[in-house]
Length: 269
Image (tube, rainbow, N blue to C red):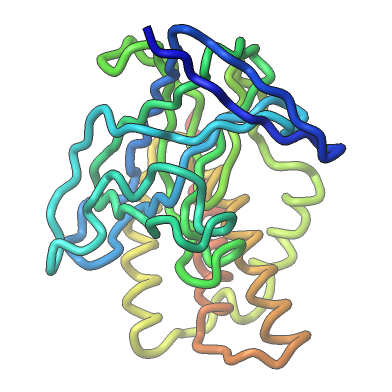
């Protein structure tokens, strides 16, 4: 029988060793909420999946792919589900970059080494979002957990970009401050002005996708992620003179489309 050892870093810089004769795994399913597009980096681009205690002093990362269903894209680019294993490139630059789900899904196993978990532990999905990550933009996905790779599955909720989910569930709504900031942005002229070039096409496709969303939790997750994306782009462009390729205006218009869809869904329930 194998013994497994985990060295866990503590906030104070100390460490302890946890051992278990038989490792236990938590299975995490990440389902893309963007329809399959066929292009490179289509849909949610997953870099890593983490499980951590509430204090963030104990962390585990996905160590095995239990299942995957990922449609092909142009050039079969970034389709290796194993790229979602291990720590994110934000922590380890030598780690594999991403798997692009392209409307599909992946199930990964996180070996907890026998360390007991409680409802306040959190699953964190690292999706390349253009905020913590230099490239990309936030894309939505749904996260579920199970003790078996075949389920049954406990749904934790929808996310977009880098997002956390408590094992015990909980409120994932927008704060009053976030709601006010979204209203400030969507009231700006650039949220309504005509876009040009490729950004016009991208935003048009996003508007169509957003109009088809049927759940408020997905819209709320996307609003939170795109608000963070907009604020990052605004900071880079306005405060630091970064290049504006239209992404700031595009983000404002996507926020406006999400805000309209949330109102529609809220009115229908």
